[in-house]
Length: 215
Image (tube, rainbow, N blue to C red):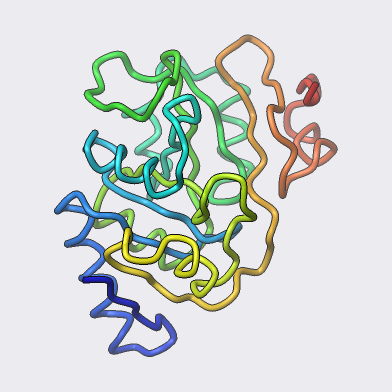
């Protein structure tokens, strides 16, 4: 059964966060607000749940699911061989609208799609998202929309696209921005922008001057 909770109401917020945590642990899908757009999430280490997420989005494994974390410390458990430039970007822009594509720890048992040994990781700047992530651990989270449609900026938009495929919807009101995160590949010696998003190149280059722009 799909349930929707208004995070502006303290009682509903508490109930909703608990319901979302239980849903993630059961391998179900949840929709939550972030600092960019609404996210569709599940337990990052539950391959069946990730499969359901891709199915709900009508998207294939060739679009691997990024991971959201609730702390900077969690990054080292997920990423391998982080460069000094990568850590400088984390220090400057996390939590925030920056996704880093890192080399994944080879020991991790997960199946996020056809990742080629990498993983996209972000720490969102949103209290509800961080609260949930601190309870669940790393979550596989993609934008809350069907593939090819605009990302949801309200819970109503997410509900209209994803419907009963999601167990719990957390309504945090309209997101402040409709622009997704900027994605930077830090697997090589020189970081490279893969997608221009909420953080522009000039701002990123204040921290890493030799950052390569998107092609």
